[in-house]
Length: 269
Image (cartoon, rainbow, N blue to C red):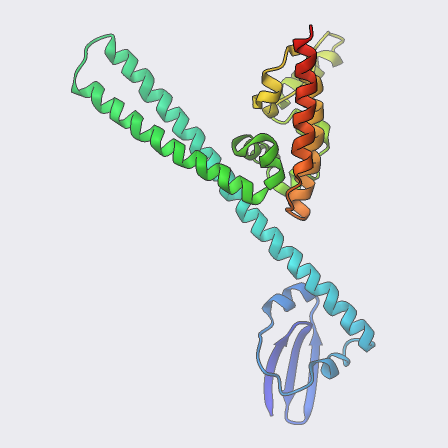
């Protein structure tokens, strides 16, 4: 019997009564490339030609299988990351188009009315309809990829945090203080540059998350406190989303309660 067989730990060559085993230098790659076929030999027995013991064989098999699973999950997340970010960019481009055509309509209305203006209005209506569809897609896809982050700040803000971070993995590894000022990096660097020169400067208290009503609707004196609290919960939410994806309602409830407390302080003044 002759033939070459790709197995998870490398290649097995059968030459009549001889068996030659070549162990792969990259077990993860060989695991992925191995073929599910009926083998004319015992895989474990053949493996013991290159593994020192049966325990070592099963230990390496388990470790390699876990690494392959992690890679596949990470690849899938990267694909989802890119899709959500692409949808967000499409949304932003639609906003630019809507604003451009709306401005053109205003310019034309100052000169005359007619069919040309009506055509522009029709285009704007179609663009707004498409925008609504894309925004709905951003919300649904963001909720699938990062349910806790999306539950906290909504799909669009979650997608913007993802875009700025570059991936869910990077967002999950960020400190709360970094998440707090994502989107305000230019202001931060400018402030730091002024401070290095001995000049007074205010560092930003929030970036993208300022768009959330829990921050935006509070007085300036309380926005920083709310931003810090929300960022701390977002850091936890991002880690849960990356490692398990299990929705934790208590995180959302904690943010809501904090907002209500700060809002009560405002109303009591």
